[in-house]
Length: 146
Image (cartoon, rainbow, N blue to C red):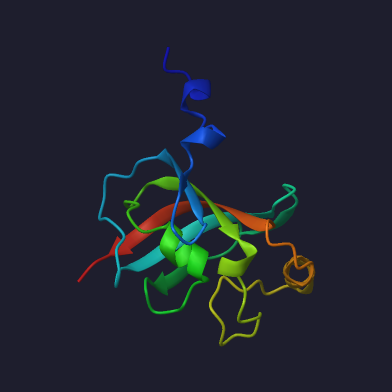
């Protein structure tokens, strides 16, 4: 049948991009497609590799940025391309494609506002484990293409 369990992605369904970032669509959107130059609003749940919760937009505004303008961490900027408005995707972002600029307001986001999530990210970045990653589940809330 086509129950909810049939729609759960399995690891083999992840597509690995050249950068090492991996993507797997959960639901396909029907709206505008995200591409270089798109202005997007995304909701996300952000976890460490061990599944530990870091942050989400659940009780906050969606994260907005322009694709390809260095406003989002590289793995996220690359990982959402090809999604359509209304779609949901899992994105596995290797540490090397994440918060390499740091966590200041001038760096690519999403930058958590609270100390706790920032400390989680800093600890993971300092671990110096090339196989470590961050895990995002992203929903494309709004996509604007000019």
